[in-house]
Amino acid sequence: MPLRITDHGWLIMRFIYKAKKGPHEVIEGAIEAVSRDAAVGKIRQMNLVPIALKEDVSVPARKEAKKTIKLAAGGGKVSKKNIFMFTKKLRVLLKSQEPLLKSLYFLEDQVDSHQFKAMIRAIAESVREGLGFSESLSKFPKLFSPLYVSIIQAGEASGNLDNSLEEISKYLENERQLSQKVMASLAYPSVMITVGAATIIFIITFVVPKMKSLFEDLADRLPLATRILLDVSEFFSHYWIFMFAAAIAGSIFLMYTREAEWQKNIIAQIKKRIPVVKDIIYNQSLCRFAGGVSILLSSGVSLLDSIRISIPLIEDDKGREELEDACQQIVAGAGLEESLSDNCRYLPDMFIKMVAVGEASGRLDEILRELSDSYRDEVETTTKVVTSLIEPMAILIVGGILGFIVIAVLLPIFEMSLFVQ
Image (cartoon, rainbow, N blue to C red; front, side):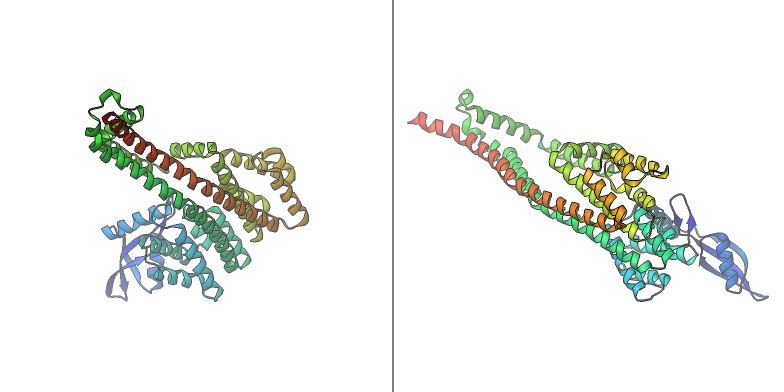
């Protein structure tokens, strides 16, 4: 399953060949290579004389090719956890003085995921054909970010690839832990709200309609709360299947269009308008940006390249544009502090001043690492505060709706009992 270059990356290819072995013997076989010329070269290295060579277009080969294209384009089921474990295990192997190619083939044998196995195989084949490790990783831009590739490239240049992998492992671990903490904090309120909403919908849709016959005698004398409850209940009981189908269809549509630009823009606008959420996202962006620049600088990447590579870690479009303008000003000869102050309204003043102090003292990577840690702590603290407020608010809202339903049901019963007396 060899490779050829496509718009997205390396595509595994397989060749069927006929070759002469000696003056009279003709043999047939299959071989993997990056191109037709490479396949011919491999056949000759086997002391054979190629007679015929054609690409294998069998169904399995086409399926494998499609799988590799999908991976190269960023598809496939390769998770961030897979990438983290790949990085961590490869670092251990290289630290043990194992050759890179042997380590990649070893890791390929250890994974169960077909997509992940195909990705590692493609990288290993690319390295075996003579490409650098960083260049091989860059064929999968959706799985290995420019930050990741640049750190590997710096490690290759310095001969400290294992140290670069260690730095990436730490960065990915910090990112993973931060995301897990945020998700864990939101898990309980989310479950509470979901269960509460489901309970309310069930009561309104299936329970309240069965009690409607109790209030038929009162007719227009029903309290306002009861009339509202019965009207809502009637609507839900008649149209719940259409509402359920619409919700499922909407969820599927949003899932399949999650990479669409219009959906990303809408989500970004919503995030900007939710008061506390926008602060969490802002601090998280600063945390990632500072951490990215720091790790690139410590890996030996130049300051300007470190900033440019880390710009995509900023979630705000305006913020990314301001940093691009600052980079242009740095290229023109301006200083770092001046360029950031003139162009970057997105970055807080304290951030810029700390960067200036770090540049002047020659400890910019350390200062940025400390800034990243402080913003990470801020995100965690804010998330805890938000979730601690969401829980009582969710209880109050769900409890209030359930209380309204109970009161709306009991009010006419009380009135009937008074009327009887």
